[in-house]
Image (cartoon, rainbow, N blue to C red):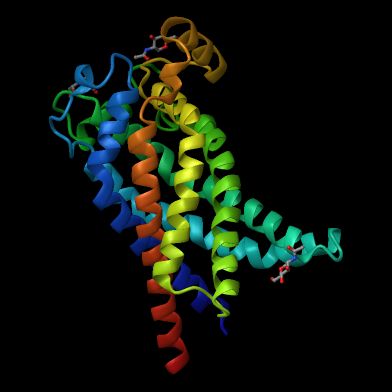
Length: 281
Ligand SMILES: *[C@@H]1O[C@H](CO)[C@@H](O)[C@H](O)[C@H]1NC(C)=O
Ligand SMILES: *[C@@H]1O[C@H](CO)[C@@H](O)[C@H](O)[C@H]1NC(C)=O
Ligand SMILES: *[C@@H]1O[C@H](CO)[C@@H](O)[C@H](O)[C@H]1NC(C)=O
């Protein structure tokens, strides 16, 4: 088995999975952003222009999903023997830890593309009539003189703060559900549909639990000035109470659990397909 071939398969599968998920669930994502934004749903656009910001999501989704899977698949292979070495005789525990660390590293890598795309997307979703390109140009002008990188990467640390607990819940749960299901039916692996169902459950649980971090991320990305996450969290709590941190939990859980199913289902399908094509050559 050649490594560059496997790399390419991960890349294509991740790209296909990311694009189909983002296209399908964009309107639900817009509703969520507008619910979480300061002022609430109707003040930030309501049901109007529900596809506003789609451009930035489409452009970013294939590269960020590919970055995630390439990192995840590569690190899983590289880290397994190292972590097993530290935990002799604890095969299952070291597998879980390997998956968690690999997925977290995958998320951090994907954020290189995902964060600037999210800043553009969320600002466009809550604007009256601007397109992704308009928002991009405004950020390029860098009117706050904060520096281009800081402008495009605002909310970077909060995004990672959200992704890591998300991943630590989702991926081991996903791998565990798949393994348990396969053992139950006495097969080597589960089929793509079963894999999708496992992904859906795992994603929904992780999404619901990490909603407060998602609200904070949205508020930071939408804020005109640079604010520290702890300061903003205290301010929001003081002004709007605790409940505001759970805004958008419905759409978030719904789109990530349905999206997780589609994402991982497409990923597994494309992966299985390409792997069998490769074997038959
Ligand atoms: C570890 O995993 C194997 C299969 O991969 C399973 O048979 C075994 O019961 C698991 N052990 C524990 C302690 O969960
Ligand atoms: C929309 O675009 C205009 C000009 O292109 C800009 O002045 C305005 O701030 C933008 N609105 C938002 C919410 O980004
Ligand atoms: C941006 O952050 C400041 C605190 O630095 C806060 O007062 C303001 O309400 C925030 N604006 C939005 C739109 O969230």
